Image (cartoon, rainbow, N blue to C red):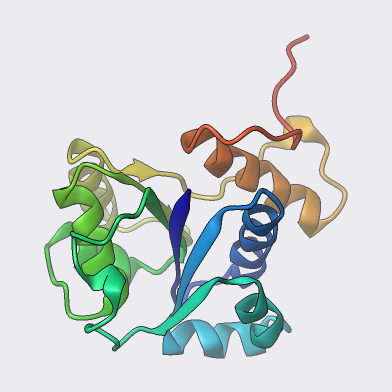
Length: 183
């Protein structure tokens, strides 16, 4: 299985990092795109870009529109944009494929492949909600990282693992990460 991970300039670099780590452990081929804004956020949040890059099978710059994943003919199983800035959300929702993340996302929609977008902002503006609604109508999975308190998270990793499990569920990848077990 091959999955594209697009990391944009919203807060939550560690969520993307954790997802890539788990995908690597599962033997999933990861194609990674890190926007320039995401690099700044990683620095602010104390995350290591080199350690995340070392886990990916292929790494691209966001302006690398000649990359293989820029074409819908490249065989890929899906894409996750995590975290997704509202600028990227708008770009994808409105067909502005001016960088590799938005171009790859457009290819997922054009080819009927799985696309998960994890917008990281609160509260959402009316425009952001409209863009999420539009993408949802197109079949995109909108998964804002909203804390599930029933898992009794103690650390940021506990919180991240819940969302990582949700993404793995979308791609039918087995895992033992936190989930609701009933009462």
